[in-house]
Image (cartoon, rainbow, N blue to C red; front, side, top):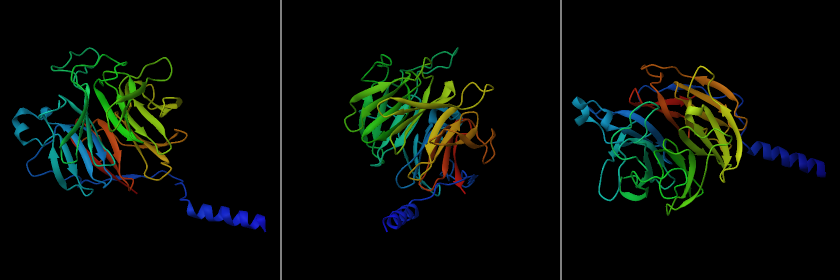
Length: 337
């Protein structure tokens, strides 16, 4: 009788648990997404995020729109609904905060507040530094664009040991009231702040002898693992939330010099898949636990479904993917099938 009860208990548990998907999803581009207001244009599209309502948020760089069209540029922070309908735009310099000179990252937390970062000050090897102060701060706004908080100040970072400022941070996310930052273009670390007060809590660098070289994207899984896309080192490193190294994977072969730029999880509770935006214009689908690459898709181009320097990535609650593309000045929606 005890054996039968045990068997029944196991059967009920299995029936109540969603089965893991045996093959990775495939994706089809939705060419109707998004619908910009008539006559409006976008600059370099730096990042994309999805909120709890499956609204899509974008951050682009109006200053990169050619001068002849700049009067028609949308404001830097943009909100669209899931169908691609434009809802609102806001952002730019204002009173009481330092807006970044070169917009980079966007994240929307569970309360609907919007976090923004910038990376002015970064110069590629051999290039002259851009004019203006380094973007050494993070900004927090309401979803309607009301300023709430600033962490750090422009041009004030003293480097990786700084507890007050970031330095050209690329990306951020919140897990259990802690803000994890890919601090990333000027520094070489994951920095963690209290998400409410903005107080510094801890930081760590790369595992092994090679420092992070553009820590470009950060995500924390439901089971408390921190995934860091180390773009120029072509790798993803995985840590506990206290910075203990767990494992890594190399993305791309010897033919490429950089790769992992954006990260997103599949929406199932186990987050079975890790999606990686490869700046070489591909999306890789990985098994999140093993970090094995299961499938890849994409190629460079301007047609719908092609990528024009895919720079960041987000996923909605239905498993659809959104790609932020620098050179084609767009976000594309890829519907999960």
